[in-house]
Length: 294
Image 1 (cartoon, rainbow, N blue to C red):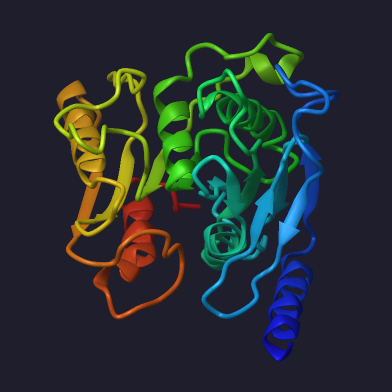
Image 2: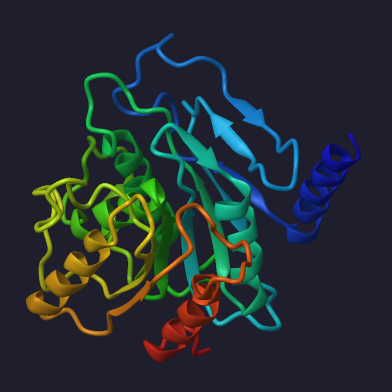
């Protein structure tokens, strides 16, 4: 009970610290392709011990939560954060809230995406989430001035399935995957940079020599940062092959980190494994590509 109380207190306190924040629903009505009654009510499963994670299930009304950077240190950059969870749940704290706090610490506005889960029947696993991510990027650019964001410094960061989502929007941004609704859908949904932490579903686990055909890399894709481990059950070959494909396509500024140990799902959590230094490496990379300049 004490651990549960502490976890809830930390979560509630973080929300207060992050204020002012705002929740923006992505769609004025039902999201594209949704079927009434297909998904049960949204549910938040709070951690029961320090090794557990906050899980959000049954998201049918996708949204984004804005965590503005302190104006005193803001550099105008923004990052859309995509938690993982196998496209079935959202690991909302260690791959979401904690990431937003980290981004805010060096002047980056964080926008936490609550995309649709679980997977919808009869649709590709990334289909509905990609619609949500494209819509979110357009809305962010539309509101950039109001939110103190530079339109050319809007990136995306994803873990596992969220990393796959970040890959999909970074390679599928030329056309919307849903009927356009308003002016925000006329604005580019291309991320200016992508941070991919153990991205999933890029290669077949048995045949790891090529990327899946839906990952279409071209010279106009954004630069990407990768962190992955060799002992991850999600093949690190996916990150390596995507890095090589970007380089071959002429995309500059990519950075790949492959670590020996660390497994999967660590998010922002510290450990004795060197992979837990990825946030420092990612911040250095963002600085190197000019994102953190005021």
